[in-house]
Image (tube, rainbow, N blue to C red):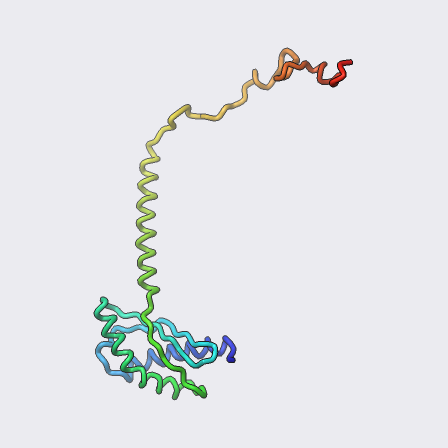
Length: 166
């Protein structure tokens, strides 16, 4: 089994080779707006998954997928020539959904910010429903016992004597 560092290096190299091959060697107009975003290689270095994005709509994605499937043989040969590995990995092309997910997250964050701004706007003119300070504050009358008895009716002398009373 190969180490993960080698698989990581090979995946980077495969992404570079495929991107270069799409730009210089494969002359398919359907692949004009393709960007290779990432490549992943299995630990045994037998299979490579290449992720791509397309500038366009769903029809462009479909035509690009068909063009990449037809160009897989040429690109795999190019990967085999330029990597020097014993077994050239098979290439599988997968549309990368990260940009779409990032765009969706940005929309959700913008919507949450608008909701927060609305709450802040409504709260700016709000007044408390009860007193301005609803918490009880201590006064001089509450702190001092003038009669020498605590809240349960015992005097300080009773507390010092204890339960026996004498």
